[in-house]
Length: 120
Image 1: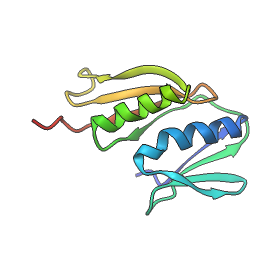
Image 2: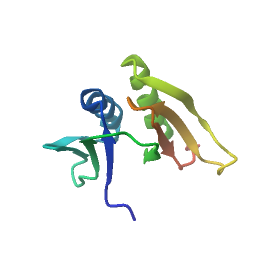
Image 3: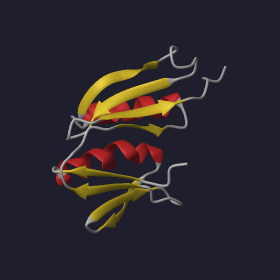
Image 4: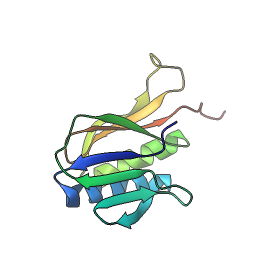
């Protein structure tokens, strides 16, 4: 089980903007503004940005449904963030794997994924 993730960025202002924008639909907001900038939901503090040299990394944020994945991608486009791949099913992973991809200010591949089947 993952308790928290910390990533390093040489572009703190841009990264704060990026993550504040794309994590808001998941109920996340910046909760800590020290040397480490911490994000979380009401009951969690589990994602941190720290000034430093960026490294290659791909990670995925879980979305509760496909509509949230779509909203994040649309919101990122409207905010002129870097889009990578539009939300789509990836049945080669599993039948309900629905994900969209963005690039953060340091070029890391950031995924938003839902594993739940569409109702109906």
